[in-house]
Amino acid sequence: MSVETLASNPADLSTLHIALVLFAIGLGGFVKGFIGLGLPLIAIPIMSTVIDPRTSVAILALPMIVSNLVQARTGGHVLTTAYAFRWLLIPLACGSAIGTMIITGIPVDYAKAIVGGIVVAFALLTLSGKQPVIPSGMDRIARPAIGMFGGIIGGMTSFFGPPVIPYLMSLQLEKTRFVQVMGMAFMIGSIPLLIGMIVKGFAPPNVLLISVAGVAAVFASMYIGGLLRNRVPQALFMKLIAVMLIIIGGRMLWFSLMS
Image 1 (cartoon, rainbow, N blue to C red):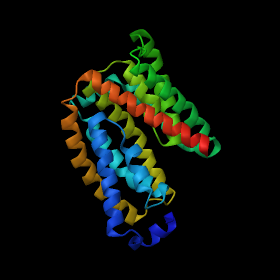
Image 2 (cartoon, one colour):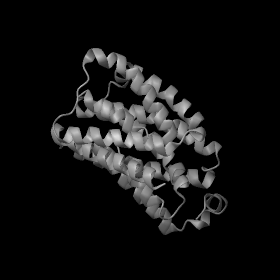
Image 3 (tube, one colour):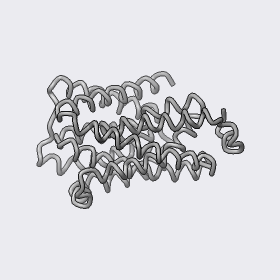
Image 4 (tube, rainbow, N blue to C red):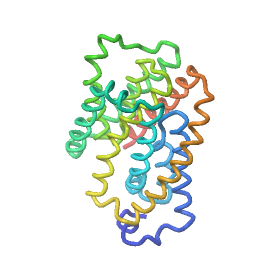
């Protein structure tokens, strides 16, 4: 099914197809509520079995913004946390804008392969118990650079997690704060994604309507996942993050090599 067909004829998506799309968003939302990431990784492959992958991204853009907004509010002290990580978030926003502008002139598959390889290597180090830790003095220097790099890579690849998550893991944040800062960073990246999809014509009114329904699915499933996260020990939580990073990084490597 093409993007154009879906845009011109909402009937191309049957009730069963829409149910599958909302199920995929709900499942991705549960995983995100549990470990703080994984919504696009889980939802888009399932959604793409019935609709064009680019339309899948367009449908998921609004649930991503809302879910990341909810995640950013986790644990309270939102303004204090945002201020503490301002030199990560501000450069990330700037980098996202730059990455979006230059995406057509850059071989995206190369960027995905490089980032995917780095993420897998970092995650394997984490699982081995040899996770690197950035000293506080170096962190002040590294944070803006990582934010800018993460934003540019995210703008080019539409995925902001791999450059940012390893850095946050190296800070050894408490799991609630870790999830909160990730939500703030991902939200900044999701907003340009939605705007870009609308401008490029991949998010016509019928697609946005499904996207709005997806917001409700994300709300409910993230809440359930969050309840489960509160029962998981910190050490196990970080191992689950590392496993998810291996999946994400491996998937990026695979598709970049196969394209």
